[in-house]
Image (cartoon, rainbow, N blue to C red; front, side, top):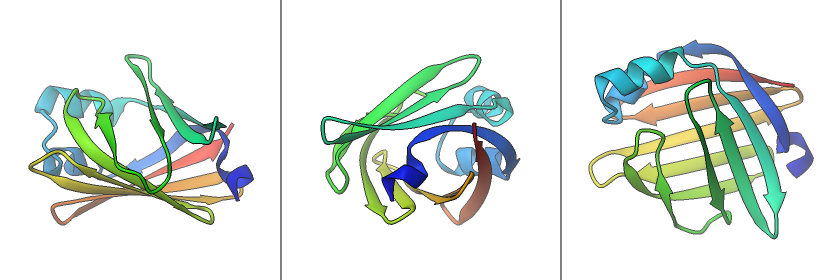
Amino acid sequence: MADQILGRWELVSSDKYEDYLKAAGVGMIQRTMASKAHPIMEWLQKDGKWVQKTSTAIKKFEIVFVPGEIFDEELADGRKSKSTVHVEGNTLTHKQSTGGEESEVQRVFNGNEMVTTFKCGGVVATRVFKRI
């Protein structure tokens, strides 16, 4: 199933993302910038680990993880999180805990589309990416 996931993906639509960022504790300036950005994501596998690279016009960042293992993650806005990512078939479920907020990001890969659902504090947002 990794073949469905690996590759580059570009944002094509977004719904309630700024609401999600607010619920997750992201500051106003950072969430405004993030909600207007059009990221490109790249998924790789390297040395038994998964790599998620995200690039926008303003910032580039990446996470490296082993599925199912807790890792320290620095979020795009600089906050620290204890995170896990589980891979099941064509779905990645990424759980983040910043000490105050619990978030879940689920990415479902279907052919040339990646549907990303963000959940935090009762807020649900969706972003859709297309393979490039």
